[in-house]
Length: 188
Image 1: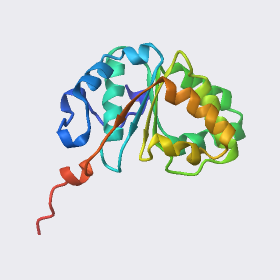
Image 2: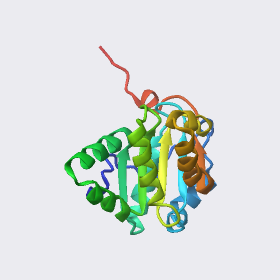
Image 3: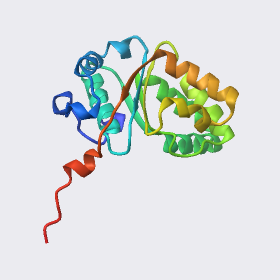
Image 4: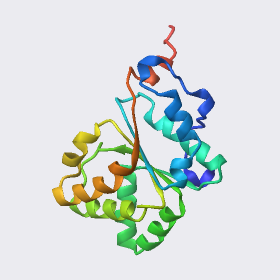
């Protein structure tokens, strides 16, 4: 559990299924069975800031761990920084080997930062290493239709998205920020 870097203790039992959130209870029930992970499929969770994308992937990550799967969580901008550092200090093969050990790799905050040419190639390698056997769960504020432009280079974007999207379950969360909803009013 500790090596997964899941910071929040989220569980399937605590999901808010209000109708305005866009959550299909049957779909989530199926996803919590973890068969998609065993089949090496992906998950894409999109929605506005605060809609609960990260929390939901944490809950799925915790469930995968309960089922015996190794899980790793990374914010995509930080992962790309870590890859750049690892390339510089010669530890990139070790970092890639660590990521391959996880049956589920959660990439949070897809599309919040520009991706450099070198990072696009690195991202393609990370994703390509997972195709067919290992799963990705990606969260993004951007709809999938905008990912191509976000990645930049059309050829690499095609390669990345082809490896992710066609083998992915999708959840599009809706509604106001859960942080705002759960915040306690300041009483002074």
